[in-house]
Image (cartoon, rainbow, N blue to C red; front, top):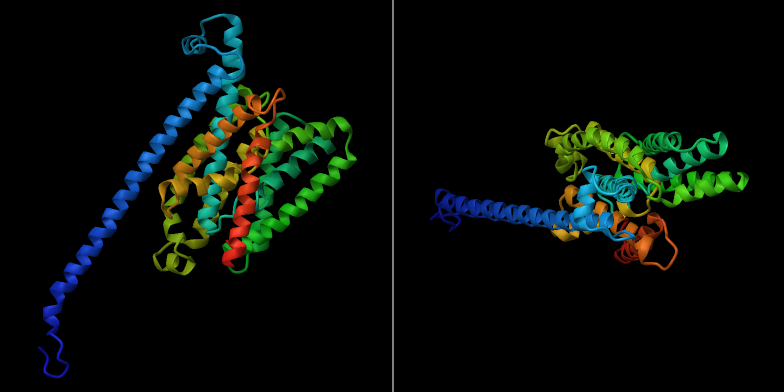
Length: 364
């Protein structure tokens, strides 16, 4: 023991400090293992539910078709009416819903995690509004429809994202500033949409209104093919870009200290999220609130503060398929577009989130 301070010798404290450090490391490792196992279980459960809902959508949406006849029709057999019902109508619609929901869910989780703000969803910060404005301009001003209108929506999403990023740039981009700029740009773009709708013909306005609601009605293989190709390119790019997401969650200074290239990594992640939003919007219109709610629901299920990107994509796909089933069969004799049903879920959640944010006195 030191005669001056009465404390034990320094050499005597090192074993105790090493034991404490080792115990802390074991606790962190055990916590991570629990989190990974829980994430794997959640993904497995969501995947099973997704398969069940997808099968139910194909077999039971309207006239019930036994699973054996569905498989036979997919293989090219069965009656002509069953083949047309399953392969030409139900299967492409269900696949479009699944892919669109996964893209929206993944895009929303990317934005919210990167900007560290639950309001930072593409349908809140103006990305979907850019796609909507471009599609309405293409329909009303140039009379285009179908694939041309979808490409216009994709271009509009990319242009809106570039505008928001440029306006939010102040020697870097902070999450809160980008969200505020995005909300303002979204309001301006939706005013453009409203102005064009009031000046267009009744037929053009009706066509644009149906698309703006977000619908899977009439979606066929011509929508599934481009969507599959786009996601086959975007998903690997997104997986590569998310390697730096963990460091970016710690803040720009810490991420820079850890060796991450902050602006380049952030731009790559935003680019992937915008492209996912654009291709999904081009396929089915701006299906509201799927991107907004999928990430928070997935993070609550895995009970963690991590990215939860895969669970968010699964939640988004599940939400769109269930909403489409509800819109077709559970709301009376009339069918409703999937975007209307998802808005019934997302709008109350947005109000709850804003009220909760106001109570705790912070911006997100």
